[in-house]
Length: 285
Ligand SMILES: Cc1ncc(COP(=O)(O)O)c(C=O)c1O
Picture 1: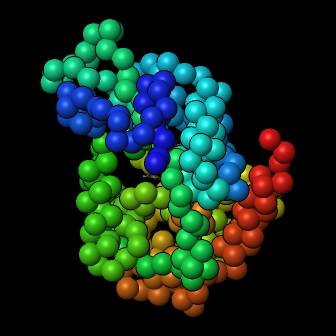
Picture 2: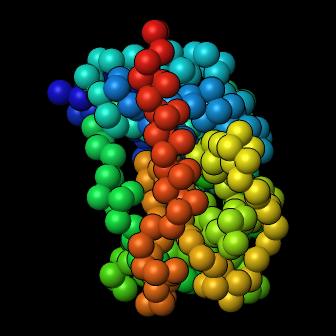
């Protein structure tokens, strides 16, 4: 039996009813977050729920909970479902109303749904790396919003899977933006490169952790746009996300990256990232 959260109620998944008029269903009109759980504890939950509220604000949606209240919901879901290693998924749609593009009246409440699920760390991919495939970034120009409207991302991920790759790398006007569900990083001559946090990418929480770790450990960073040609010539490549953590990229469009094994800077960052997880585990709640 899995306990879900639905607008203030904790209930079995089977008993939760969502309206067919929900705007998430019609338009993808909503926002979401994924928060990692290590050892039963939430990782960077403040950052995730801050972004959740910011995403909602950017689509002109008011959410009825504070960051602390959302954290409380996520903690309860992880605890009640006995999640030791996994993640919490939470989404908010603009609610249910007869289908019209314009917003419904203020009496329509957002529909907030959340659950916690077991999801082990992808340790073999983290250790050995993955292959990726490039694709045109056909998405809209507000990729900074963690919107439920993910069709461009879904199509890109499937294209990558069809080609036997783990992730799609979006390229817009010759510039590498991000992955279909991750941020992209390259290392050249010891310097880390990643696309700046503009409207063209989601400013990943893992991306932010990486940049903080680079500052702390004196690894040089260039947050500047770079071309696909430059990306393919980097010494090391990796991707980051809440569930993928730091996953090395060992081939891109069939071309081997570096010597085909995870690079030195990538492994160093993995090591210091691991320390942040260890610190979380050591925290007393
Ligand atoms: C498009 C996109 N970019 C980047 C990320 C990485 O973000 P985070 O590190 O917050 O998981 C995600 C995560 O799902 C994503 O969907």
